[in-house]
Image 1 (cartoon, one colour):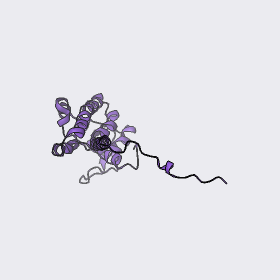
Image 2 (cartoon, helix red, strand yellow):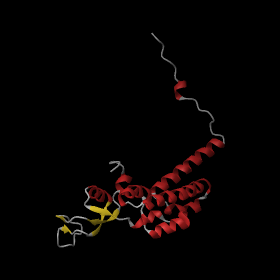
Image 3 (cartoon, helix red, strand yellow):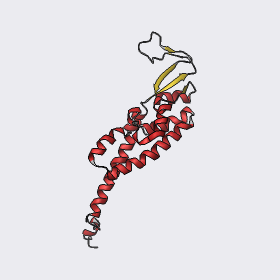
Image 4 (cartoon, one colour):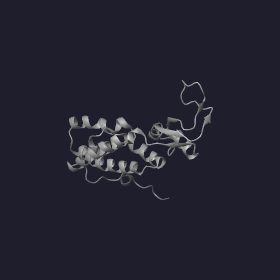
Length: 185
């Protein structure tokens, strides 16, 4: 876990990933409806990322590529990344991808993340600087958590720039300069 107190990091690590057990495990309850408290060798289950990471480093499991990075998503991103609803696949698509990429051993996940972010970054900034409210209401639900933060930062930046350009105070006097010095005794 990269940042123990960051709620976004905690929620990212709660995403489920498909795994295959290399070793049998006794005393493990993955499915509450099962009659046994064990997992057989070769069993395919879905575990939260935080647990899958620990078991992976102990060489008890292998991690498969999650469904949000499957071939269908890759084809959609290649066709038009700006229109893909990444939030429905994973609200923390980029963070989750960065954490899962070294574990799955599939280099195409990293390429997918990079190409999607490059294309969507340009689109997000363009919409943040130029789009009207009605256009953005359709666009915002498609954005992941990271992209939403980026969009809001761009809008705040643009609003500050417009305020400055329209005649806001050009130079501000530092608050330290307004105070008088104490006489030296």
